[in-house]
Length: 301
Image (cartoon, rainbow, N blue to C red; front, side, top):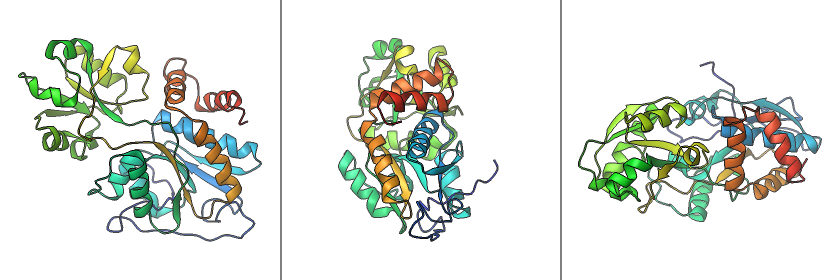
């Protein structure tokens, strides 16, 4: 993958180099991000995250702030490792997963606790804007038939299954805290792992329905859960941290720009995320159109 210049400077000190750039007081952001009067916005290589980033971009443009879109960079393992190579000024993130990426020993699980803990581990020069009511986090999902067969409602119920369990997700999930090792540590459940590189997309759903895997990792705001009558297992022991959508910004992003993004965050709900994602998956609409329509609906255009 081509290395993209980024500048969120979000990473543990042992792994990443913080890159900070200054700019004039009249600039919306530091010159390190754009050309001195442009906010560079990044996104993960995931359609849902790209839609949120596009919403940020269009909202800022409606307020006469220039933006530069650097979307579809990659998963967190990619863009966090590449942050030291450049400068991104604004990035839609998720509180829980980002906290674990920056502090693998973090113990906070509740929304406000996770947000506060994340503020504490952000490098100097970066800040969190207001977190959104919208949440989108990893979850363990099974088919309804499998849930009915074994009486599954919670992750803990997987301990009742006597047949081998195969867990499918992106390859990086194998080493993440909410992967097989975390499942064993938190719930005492052993599973085999098979990589499926589509971030809980149609390949994961197909593998579940075909019985190739019994448990899949799918984001809670993915419309495929309802569409395919899948069952999300309740996480009763906090294996998955609270994961609110939160913008991460350089300290050089102006107060005016921050106000625009905070208004977007306040208006975005979990139900909105599912509906936005459905328009991408089912209607095959581009992020630009989806974002434009949502901003009009919320009177934020």
